[in-house]
Length: 467
Ligand code: GAP
Image (cartoon, rainbow, N blue to C red):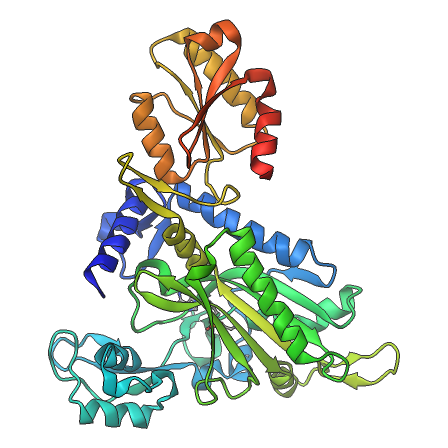
């Protein structure tokens, strides 16, 4: 990682802790590796991202419904999906420290910037090829020690139900939310008036025993996914067109709804070797994080693979009957799958702005994403008449907007704090307000200040937030 890039990430991590976006989990006990909690600002931002996704892809579409399935599903689910057998990452171990690493990540770091490897696609290498590469180029661990041969490491977290341990009670924490959609396919079909093509969306926690984590909340053991399985009849719907229309929707969501800069986004198509065996086509929507271009959102044409696997393992009939022809068949799916925490990190990186001219850090989040939409201040905290008026204004505005009330320190310091958490507007009540019934509204991005009548604040913000 380049020095400049490291610095940006360090600054974001420090802002997150300082301002209550993200804390290391259970820090009072020394923390838990690669696990994080979301503080008051982080919880609001996460909720905003989730809600916008749900609204865009579930509520605003007639062809979509949403579900909320269990984290622990019947263990056969994961046999059918192939996760028990082949949800693996290539792992190596430092022979001295016994720290574990992803073999593909060590190879990626080794080849970075080296001309002779410019055409090597690490994702294409299988375990044998990685073993040969490590041997040939004598790759070492980051601590400079010898490493073991790569071996497949299963990412599913196992746990047990009840006090009885053993095979019978073994269950898994879900490795993806997608399988809960497939196992509910028949129920959704039978209990809703859905007709192909239609999709089912779900947001929820997933768990993976990742070998290499790090990079803050980009790759963690516990994370949140927002996934869609869009079912269709391949004889009636052109999958390529459908795939493209989902790609367009994904792009629009990130750029227009979350307000992320287009220059920081790109599509990357999976190579034939890299693509999962059941997928006919897969693309990643990558974001340019400070540590490089990385997958934000994946889209795959999974065919009828998953439903057919569940038919085989459950012996249930998971077919759809065409209402016109009465023909029964197993629908195909296109799956757009995104990590909520990766979107969260992306919005922080994209909005992070060091305004050197004005000696401030600003989180230029889209207004829809900002944890607080408004902050209300009395100019001085020891003047009861100002505090009282400010409280009145705050009580009124909090009915329509998530608002902060701050009377600590001087107004300049309060502005800096609100800039760092991305609050679009600050409202200050001063002595003139008591006379003329007007307040000062200050814009986060332009720092411009305007006097607005208290009675017209609601209408003023309605317009500003529409922009
Ligand atoms: N159902 C398909 C599926 O799970 P995936 O590419 O493994 O596909 C989908 O995961 C998305 O979930 C990724 O694009 C990424 O945004 C997010 N994700 C996956 N593993 C993650 C991890 N360990 N930490 C944070 N987010 C993760």
